[in-house]
Amino acid sequence: MTIENQVAPTAPTQATPVNETNISQNTAPTTPSFDFNSFFPEDIRKDADYERLSKNFPKDLSAIAKDYYHKNKHFGKARDVVEAELKAQVSEPASFKAEDYQINLPEGYSIEDNIVNTAKTKALELGIKPEVAQQFLNSIFEADRTQEIELERQAYEANKQSLENIKKEWGFDYERRADIAEKTLMNYVSPDEMENIHKLPLDQKVLLSKIMDKVASKVSEGSIGNNLKPIVAKSPEETFNDILKDKTHPYHRGDTKAVNEIFEMLKKPYL
Image (tube, rainbow, N blue to C red; front, side):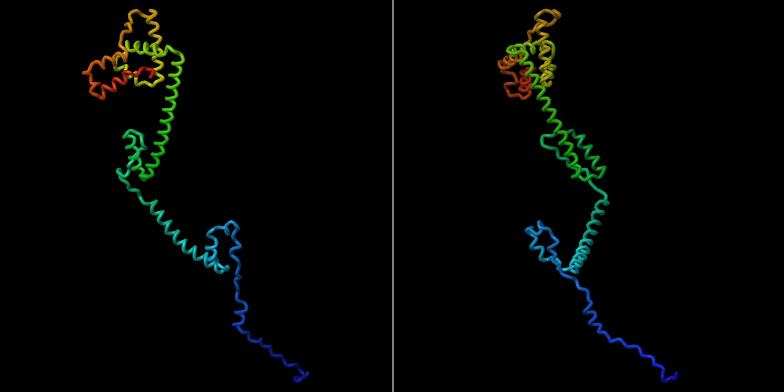
């Protein structure tokens, strides 16, 4: 085979130049737009502010991404600042003074000063804020007051029931037997003791009247010692009449102590 008969090698075909500008224009990613409102349920779309707020909703995914980024960037910084401030407040040592603790008691409520002072000292020692200490003590005062009211109610019910029982037991003879019971009692106690008896709870005074009623009955029957003093003491009413006649008595000058003493004297054990 001659050289002339050999097939000459074919040169490679060169590719047609491509316009890069056209490629970039034809292949650039596009972000489809969509109806952002469709993501919200019906009850939110009916909200009065929805129409106003929806005007600023992002229109495509790119806008959503930007909005998300900027909001997190902004609020992230704000969150870090607030968190740092809170940590600083928590770690900051409390510095309160004794006069910062002004404990206010509920109206009509009383408590011993030493208890309040002890609470103030302990709150200062523990670094408790004055307003927190007040709130804590308020809860204690309220619980104590509630218990006090309940005890008063129970005492009232007990007194009421005792008085009803003795009136029912003595019937129409109630007033006479009550007077005799008091006169009998006055034979065996001093005026000071009688004053303390008047301060007893009503149910206890009723019980004492019933005892004195039985003592008076035994004395009249002679079934107990004959050496007991006869019942000759004046009744409170008789004593009060004597005071009314005695114009020199402090009662007539409006002396508070005298008036209170007469008031206590006239109170029968069952009143």
